[in-house]
Amino acid sequence: MKYIDIYKHDKPNDECGVFGFYNNDNADVVSIAHDALYGLQHRGQESAGITIIKDGEPFTHKDLGIVSNVFSDKSLKKLPNGKIALAHVRYTSHDYLERAATQPLVMRFIEGTLALANNGSITNFAEIRNELERGGAIFQSNSHAEVIGYTIATKRIECDNIEDAVLRTMEYLKGAYSMVLSSPDKLIGARDPHGFKPLCIGSLGKSYVISSESCVLDSIGGKFIRDVEPGEMIVIDESGIHSYHCNKKKTTSLCLFEYVYVARPDSVIDGVSVNQARKKAGEILFRENPVDADLVCGVPDSGLRAAQGYAKASGIPYSAAFIKNKYIGRTADGVGNNKTAKLLKMRLNVLRDVVKDKRVVIIDDSIIHGNTSAHIVRMLREAGAKEVHMRISSPEFVRSCYFGIDLPKEEELISNKLSVEELRQKIGADSLSFLSVEGLRSIAEGCNIGLCDGCFTGVYHADEPTEIYEDKFAVKLK
Ligand code: SF4
Image 1 (spheres, helix red, strand yellow):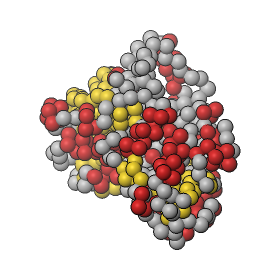
Image 2 (spheres, protein in one colour; image 1 turned 180 degrees about the vertical axis):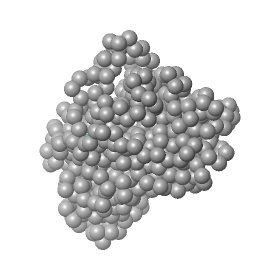
Image 3 (tube, protein in one colour; image 1 turned 135 degrees about the vertical axis):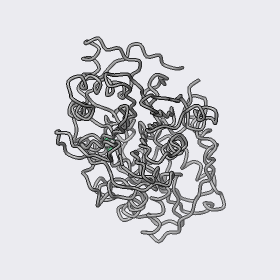
């Protein structure tokens, strides 16, 4: 059975969230890793997993599904308390789900066990995979993590230690990755030289944490130490934390869409609060695209903070206009246009008394195909809104993403097919405007590193893939 999120086909999706824990306190690493997965669930809902390293041996539980479905009291009790924990949630951009690609991935190599969890897409995946296959390598899945793990294991043969092997691998890989891995007695975190994906370090008592997002540290009662720098490898072992940098210097390029949509608002990434960035997007959106109205509201969840910013800057009252049924996140069915509308109605309901006879500004974070926007406008009109003005807290998508955010091909993006006016007509709004690229860049003012806006401008700071890997044997689920 294929599980489909009702937003999946009309929203960008991130590929994964990662977590690593080095236990110096005899802490309950299983329940800490389990709690951390809930803090990362928004980054991937298609598989979840935990690997515990105890006395150098790995113990793993992972499966397809969301965290609450994958883990039961029984499966958690089967995991021992250990020295190191890795945890992972995954979203896949493919139309099929591979059980073998669930992470953490556990491999045996020259040094013992290598467990690995990754977030991001490497752009020379096809070249590396083809080369390894020509050398006789056998892969169980299509995941980038497996290619990364295999590369580290191969480099380890040429290097004196695991640290050098990971650094050599970082110099070899292109594209986006933020990963955590364990060699038998070390926890290692590495962020690609562009810094596309967030990764931070924290502490819990005397123990150490590496996580995709800082919100996880709050949820487990930990403290934020700092972000991992682009091109940096962090090694945590008995003697503490050690920092190394790979020799590959690149233009830094954090994904701006983390601030708009991907990350949780209670995270701080590279010095900028996601909550503040979203509010600022709303304020700039008003300054760039003002409109007379009676009410500002947002599409839950990622449109809410931008709506608050728009209301603050405009002086127009803000109100929640949608009630979200949080128990309907996923459904076991296909998504056609009518089906999407029905599912959206089940998930979101309009507060009629709030919008009736009002001129409403509705804020959403992005438009990919336009179907969701059309349904939202229709729902507001059916609830009695007099006017519906849609404002989008990011610019129009004009290019795809090769670095781990699942965007459709360029020819499928609605902004490459229709002008803003044509799109306004398609979704049935009274007016429609997007945030400018300059506006988007300014929401992350104060960010410690450079920013990527490639899908909005067509300018990438990293190489696009030169080859596409074709998996002839993948079985597509109907
Ligand atoms: S191309 Fe867009 S979605 Fe991809 S990393 Fe850059 S800003 Fe993020």
